[in-house]
Amino acid sequence: MTTFNIFANHHNEQNGGICREHALCDYMGVDKVHHDNIDYRTASDISAYGMNISVKASAFTLMSGTLCEGKTDFEDIWNLFANTTHSDTFAYITIDFQVYMMNLSEFGQFVHMFCRTERDSEKNGGAMKIRCRKESKKMVKWLNAQVA
Image (tube, rainbow, N blue to C red; front, side):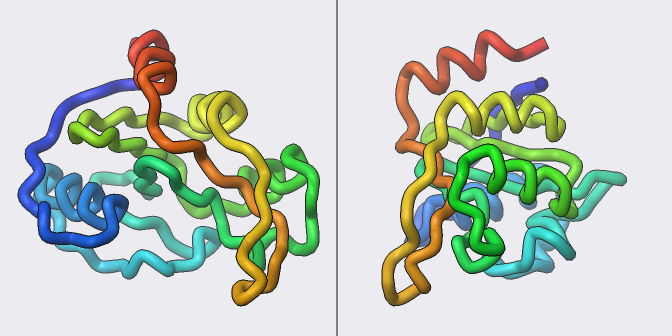
């Protein structure tokens, strides 16, 4: 895992994840080409420099419950995601715009440490999904301990 800090110049974005995604695009010098609702199985948030990057921020959803194929167990949902994701790199960006770049194995450890299953809203079908807890000092401390 590697880490670096980026400058936040998209403070007007209402969605924190989108704000961080745009800031990472700016840092990398790439244009944002995918929308936030892109299917994780066919594309990534950012594709550049030979990487397919999925960008995550505080309180993220791993994948919507409608894509979990009726699975309800954490491990079953994670395995479905891990075996079908288009991304090979995962960027968790903290509230203060520290970027932690991870491969799938490292991201899996992160997900297992800080995420849980919860139910989608009834208007979205009510299926189970994996959701990350809100960013905490413990999470940032863990991430910093993993940096190579």
